[in-house]
Amino acid sequence: MCGLAHYFESEGLSTVLVGFVREHIEAIKPARGLFLDFPMGRGMGKPNDPEFQKKVIRAAFELLEAETGPVLEDFPEIIPVRDGRMSYALPPELVLNTDDIGDVNELVAAVQREIDALLPDYEAAVAARGRTTVGASELAIKDFAPFVSEFIKGEIPKSPRKGLPAIPLLKLVVEDLEAYYTETRTHRDGIDDLELMGKWFWEETKAGRLLLSLEAVSIVSENKVMLQIVEMSLMTPRFWSEGPLPGSSAAGW
Image (cartoon, rainbow, N blue to C red; front, top):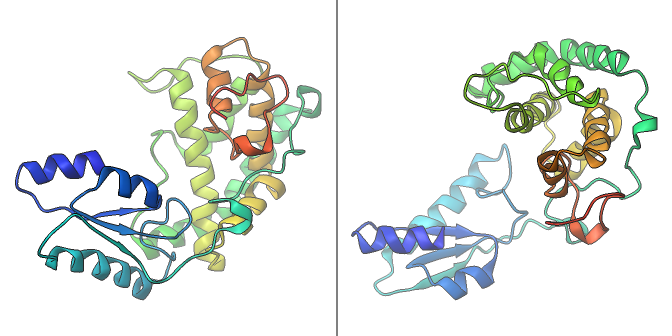
């Protein structure tokens, strides 16, 4: 983003960059930078707190008033990061083996019951917000779990989406499934704690169990792309500092 800021500035467009890593901003020196001491990904600060978010936006726009640059300012408020983490990370001991998976069809049925139970609250969340991040895969919500289950059963299914192979689509389905749960819960219960939300989804729901089962199968998969998806933490929220998964090369951890 710092590089893009330089490019836009060279074309006569004024830019303001907000960033979470002060050292990066200092090194690349965009014309105007606002350092946010927030958990990674929370560019406007606290969810569901428009007044706080407006303060961040105002602080960023105020940098446009600087007569010379580069300018780097620190936003005065801090959102603490727990235990050195930017967000929830699965406990290292919570790794399933393929022997732990059990009956995949029963697990899918349990996930479908969860999805059905959450549907009224999900629809209320969409109505209240006027938007949703669910839909990147373009699959129907009812098809999320069955699609994932094909991989758990050891098969790579034919992609139902023209022009997108099954494995890239799988990543989008995983994101859609998690978004369906988290959007519902954040609206229904007013939760904005990433640790609490992550613990609920990954450690308590059947959908979390389904994705952990997918991870277990992927770790021992002969398909290099499946293994890379796991190793890069694109399937489950793990962090390199907590050690590699059993059986993985840990490249990218």
